[in-house]
Length: 278
Image 1 (cartoon, rainbow, N blue to C red):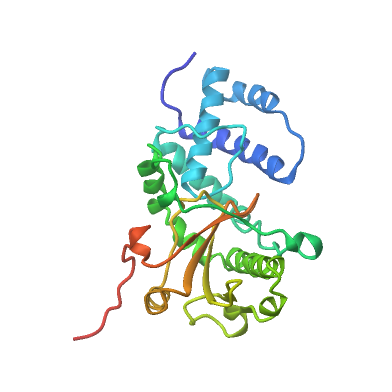
Image 2: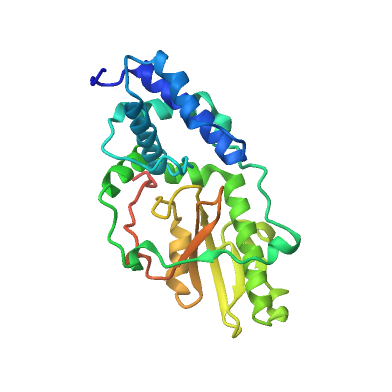
């Protein structure tokens, strides 16, 4: 059996096979991992079934770093070569519709709308230390600018805001504050961007809540973009403003909230500069 480095051709083959299984997994279609593995083996350079299995886990790790879905049955395994990251990037470049596949997502209606989003503590306030592989994942996220990708995905952002809007309505109604629920506003939709927050809501006691929504299909530590204006409003209205981070959105949306000062939770990095003539 070969123990050498995987070639670009091998990486491209196994990445394509992985995405075929992932598409079935997301859609709820049955598939057989063993059959996929056996069909793939003759196309590779004398690889063992164990090597193929582990490479599938490596691909899960790459996708986690890219803030994307992965197959739950393949637990992310790290310490992979960057050539595998390049192979995943090549597949995504050849299949741009994959990143836009959630464009049709709408907020749930009817009874489903009344189910609030699961909200947990921010990663910085959980009792668990950062994962050992965090730096490797952040390196991937920076290299491929995952935060900018999510920011450009208007359909994803809008779907996230609409889901949080439904959550706020449901939370206030369950607290017996139908009067406040009727006053919740989707500011970014009604007035356009520029307010420094997306949704104007309320706490059950009537205190204003100014909610900036950031949505990703990735895990809870996926980086995100935040504008200078959003930071300014967060500073000016500290007691009212919060950042509502939606993650794992495509499968089972989960969330946490960050309250100012944001520097207590995240490292803010300047990614663009305005150039003015002297």
